[in-house]
Length: 288
Image (cartoon, rainbow, N blue to C red; front, side):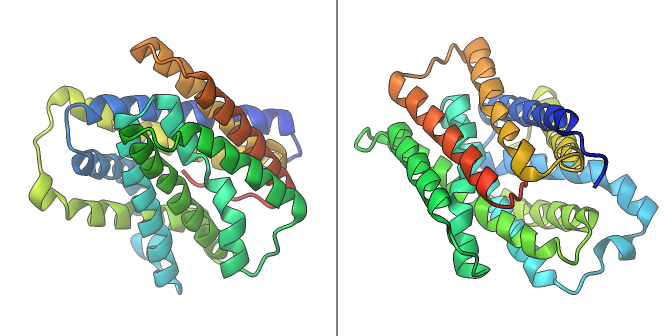
């Protein structure tokens, strides 16, 4: 832990949120030209390419040697499933809504940690979760047809991300962050290549540049996020990750003239409040 500087940590976390929102914009543009399977593969491939020089410098065996391969695999596959759901939601929902549904992970984490890690769920956390899922109902709009179905896929991205985060908590006791990121990149790139056998579509230069930019933004966001948490406790600055929703809403208005209705706006407010409260009441874990 570096010197206690929550203001600087919050700034770094907010910059990471801007990187993730910017990634969402490029993924949405690319999703208009390519199938979801191809978009996910190239996002992982470009992210891995950014890491390879560091793997080479540190040594392949040092970067990959682990006593917990199955836990790495679980974390990576859940993260990949979250990515498939999130990118699908980005292509079919307003940008801010898709980002927000992915950020419901803190609402699922207490239940997963309770079952898996035997961590108790306090009354305040339970109340925050109830508020959060009330907000989810405002966004899902049950009975509204296709929009609700796609929104459920977006919500699933938050649930899968929560499992990945709890897996990451277990790994963090013994595994260095770089090894976790490398395993994640290799596993996701390899597994996401399989659907290309039946869904391949050759991307154009412009789309490749968009996907390369998305991978770069994602890697930069991960770096800034980990850097930010070195300056202050997660419970103190974690809520600033929700600025990603603000950035996404601004992008959505600028590029696609998206303006949320009052139900979505109310749901957004409830989820942000609930997520912030849940982070404040427990030791937070974050992954992108």
